[in-house]
Amino acid sequence: MILSRSCFSLLAFLALFLIACDTSSNGASGSSATAASGDVAAPAPTAAATAIPTATPIPEPTAIPTPIPTATPTPVPLEETLTIISSGHNHTCALYGDGTPYCWGSNKNGRAEHPADMKFSDISGGYRHSCALTLDGSVVCWGDNEYGQLFTPQGQFTSISSGYWHTCALKDDGSVKCWGGYIGSDPNGSYTFISSGNEHACALRTNGTARCWGNNGDGESRPPQDEFTDISAGGTHTCALRTDGSATCWGSNGNGESRAPQGEFIDISSGREHTCALKTDGAAVCWGKNNSGRASPPKNDEFTAISSGGEHTCALRLNGTAKCWGENDYGQTWP
Image (cartoon, rainbow, N blue to C red; front, side, top):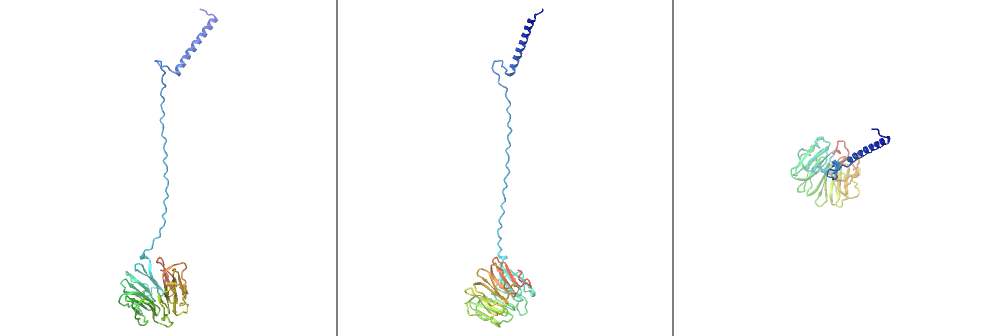
């Protein structure tokens, strides 16, 4: 059947309308689906994202600085310190705290070659020989024996002093015994201190007065009437300390060795032509002949003991080490 143009247009409009309605219905079911029971369908569960734990940073350890230890001064052991020192003509001898001897300088005639494996309580260097007291008080000498310096006496002694060719010592009863080169008869009486010079010797009585004997060509054996605490016989002069600490000397004075300075002293020692002493603060003072600097002690040093030799001087510092000055032709100032 043939339709009119208007009918055909109407049919076409209706067809387009039906197509549009069908398309709209299909789009709605895609966005919100309706359940058969009429309830609203629950949305599909969304997968929850598993949280990745954040790594906790490990702190780097703080470096703790290692403290630098403070160096503690190591005290010098008693047995390694010197307690006695004695200057001879061109050698020196000393004792360590445990009594071990130590000598240096010229060793001609064996004057610096002390006995091995022996310990002593006192030691003294002479011209070409040395003598010491063992711990039981007996005498031991070594070196030159031209004048019988090594013919030691028997008995027990408390102190010893070697001179030029002779040696004198005090026995335990205070009496004097000398041997070697002849310097006269031993004096009678009891003494507390003794010192040997070139060809004379001096000692202090218990009341502090001095007694000297031997050569007296320069008046070295003629002490003043006074009381002393220390005495030292030198070449041809003698010096001593009074009870107030002042120094006085007698005998030869050709080089000023007997011209004692003013002041208060605690130790004194006469050499061949010079003298040295220690002040109360430990400083050394010397006078007399100064060849090779024997009378020029070091400055800014403190000492506890001093000993003048032929042409050199040695002293002990507070820590027990030795310091020497003056002539060193035989190494006598190299302890």
